[in-house]
Length: 450
Image 1 (cartoon, rainbow, N blue to C red):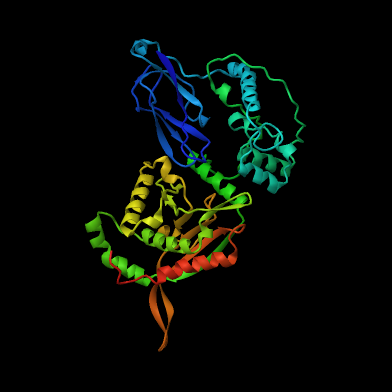
Image 2: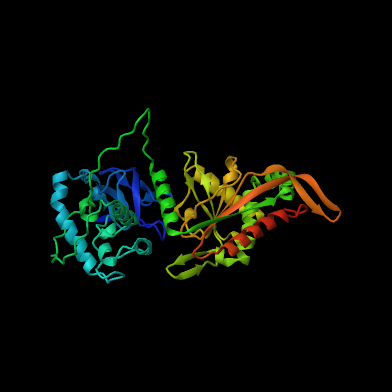
């Protein structure tokens, strides 16, 4: 007979926390190995968490909508047949008074475990992510200030939300001067059942007056994914100095070729032939010529990615966006790309994406023309350095230059735009790459066989 902790799994190298969406099991329920116990959501994708043991759910340690750090016990499973008749344990939902009493113990536990950890950066025993340090450096926040900002992350770490809130408060004059930190002695605490108070320290909150809105209005709170998207967009603009270049491409040959072969392609391969895999092909060929567009920035180091993983922004029925990733796109032919594009798009729309499906992107393509836009100024998908947008394909009269002279013809034209991180990609390189992609599309072979 033993009690096994179910741990919040790590769903990606950049994922540090997850939100509990739904519990499929309750205390006292039997559970089998690999049976789904709960659903969770990260800033990338929703996922199911299976049981790591067979037995009976003894306790649920967090409630729906709780945000839990990776590696934290979220439930307990009692193994052994004799335990199946054990009374159901109630979820850990301590009243306010209980939380207040356990908070000092939780702080002591966090401080003790942190003291045993080697210092990674800073002058105190706190870890700061590269993002937090970059924001602090860009906003002139000294290390002494940083070390005294209350952290709401795991083990009291300062998150990007904490540092941005501090910076915003400082600019508006609402943030008081941070007092110098004092070293306090911590004593070991006796082992006790885990609760939310033992794991997450609640950040101090300041009460703000309720906003008043004039006129006839309707107030709608953002859903979870929209909040995450908003946070990512602000972070990207704060991190990367965006520059956007524009060009246009005559894609008549590509359009006519697709119209001619798409029915046979679908009949033979069982997949619809969209323009997206054709765009991906052109981007991949150009990334091989200009590898600096397929990289990321880590401090002063440029990390050039040898794998070419193309993210494709996909609209969800809810109106939100998600970016599944075509892994090793340079190793796939048109059939393989079509299967990947259609499979990921369908999984995204049906909420069937796996955590790995949104990880590891090195360059992103977004089709703003899907909804009729001629062009757009996309925001970089961090930590990448560029994102390319393709607009709607429209017939327009165009001047055609020939050896016999100029003429005007009706052609299928498309605008392309690319936003890139000016810390790494200069205007010359950005414009050269974008025009190279346009030329690849214009030089499409109309006699191509699939």
